[in-house]
Length: 295
Image (cartoon, rainbow, N blue to C red; front, side, top):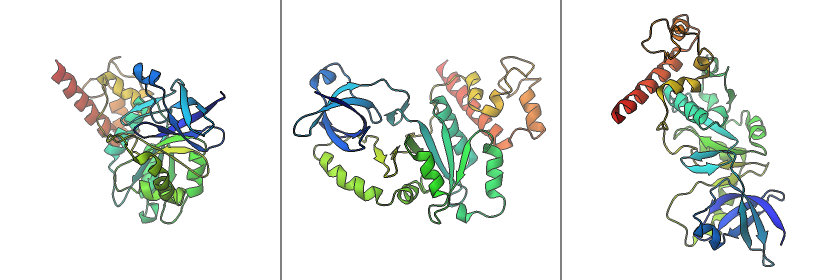
């Protein structure tokens, strides 16, 4: 029987929904008992091989190796994280943005920073933000309300598997609906085939864009708790600090209290953002407290 390839986009209690890699069509697939007996179960985002019966029912035959994996929620093969924030209504604090960026860096997944609601901004609010983050991250200013840079967003998403992250109220759902009008209605209709007997657990789900591409409809991270990380490794996830590694008087400098710290000199000279350093300082203290609690 011919094997096809597809991506798992949603789960039911006894089957899963797979988007065919070639046609883009959706197929309901069951999973043989041999997988369950071995404790193997695909997760959303997994690339699978499946076969089709004469009645059009799919059957999972193999789960292919994962290229990446997020743990909260558990989702694989994400190629980029779309971090959506706003500078007004609500104003997302830089510390929150920095935590998302650090967690994405730890997961080794590239980030595109989307500043939504730019129609509300005045003066130099946007340029100040891009001055802090633009050197190391792609930034797309958008307005779902005014449809500003929506086509640019579609190009970034087209043909990729993405996860959308961001705090409540920044306009993630409105942005998705603007990018792909009618998306929520279509998902609602498709969901009926999986609704009966679904697990009570809340699973991640991939939504399919008409223009090509898939996106996780979850925040990408269930919470903002830092994963296990050594204090001295945190600076590796702040690119402006990582590039200065080895420049301090002490090779194990973590840029907090040590004498001869080159990073502190750059901070004093205004070459490193005060808000970024403050985020680094706060996360370092947090990790030190966690480390101290384990001793």
